[in-house]
Image (cartoon, rainbow, N blue to C red; front, side):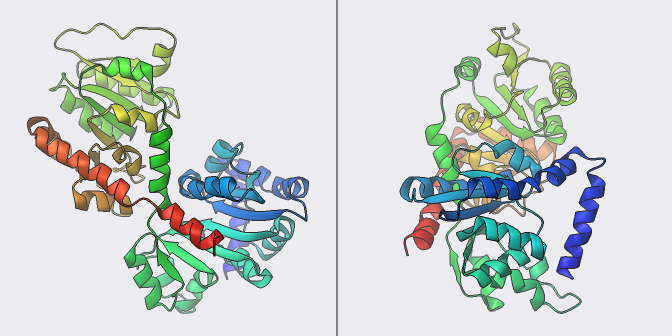
Amino acid sequence: MYTIGLYLMVLGMMIASIFHKKARKMVVGIPQTYLLLRRHIKKTDRVVWFHAASLGEFEQGRPLMERLRTECPEYKILLTFFSPSGYEVRKDYEGADLVCYLPFDTPGNALSFLRLAHPEIAIFIKYEFWLNYLLICRRKGIKTYSVSSIFRPNQYFFKWHLFGKYPALKPIRQFNHLFVQNESSKKLLVEHGITNVTVVGDTRLDRVIAIKDAAAPLPLVEQFAGDAPCFIAGSSWGPDEEIYIPYFAKHKDWKLIIAPHVISESHLKDIEKLLEDNGFKSIRYTELEKGEQMPVTSETEGQALIINCFGKLSSIYRYGKVALVGGGFGVGIHNVPEAAVYGIPVLFGPNNEKFREAQALKACGGSFEYQDDASFAALMDNFINNPEALRKAGEAAGGYINANAGAADKCFSAIFKN
């Protein structure tokens, strides 16, 4: 049934590729994988294969790849993606010897891929559980590991299906070991007879610390911020912007730095219009780069900087007193640890229950949920009127990140030093 479903998915993807650019990139890119493997992987190479669905999973696997590159240079690193949004951004990643798409998990594809790649070790990041790849890896004696995975009772694996519950657990049973994020994941697996499990936390925390330590100053942002308190809105969406921009219309002593998740001209213009309607003068980051000056403001006007380019946000959080991470009114919140690592409180919308770090940060007092204008205003009023509350929340956020780092070290030692 699983394989039949995959063939139907492949057919659907081919049809979708006629109309959708993203699907077309996959359909065109996947056949190139076999050519790339033949060209770049020799029979004598010792290969470690990392698979990530997309960018988020890549960032979780990156600390392991970088440490492997440094400490075990005898291995070649093969990195595969399933999503074009991951592959297109990281296809030139220098930490891997080869980056390519992962072919669909049909028996023939899996057999061909593994014959050409012949990895000694395969590491699947977070939610990647491809049955045919895992079965053939096990048959060939390839050691397989799940890293930064997290499990909940409502997931597909733990529900009753047409053929009962346990067949759905078959992919998970193929791993040599699973390195999970929390105790509840381990407990759930053990209850279903899967005991080769270790709780290590999330490797993404190691990654955000590394990013923070390597972050370069941004003189243009620093100049814009000056001595004023700054509110950083990271990966924000329209529903977030409609809440925080009107609030700061009443607190013009704060400056806004807005890094929208979608950097389209229409969205940028929507943000600029909303800012203008609320008494803000704004400028885009690329305009500052061209030498343009921030518009002169009066005492009744606020200032906002719109980050209309990628790759800056993780460094920009350092200039904030409070951060917002968007997505909580739609797709789900984005990268909360990326902001919390700087020791500032992080706010986000209600769609956050599936994000472990967000829940942990809420529990320790480092992050906070808002549902509407009133709850957002209550949180910000408390921070503005109570500096001690702001300080404690920031310390809680940074303290959580530092206290829970080290997952990459634990995984690396268990996989490559035993």
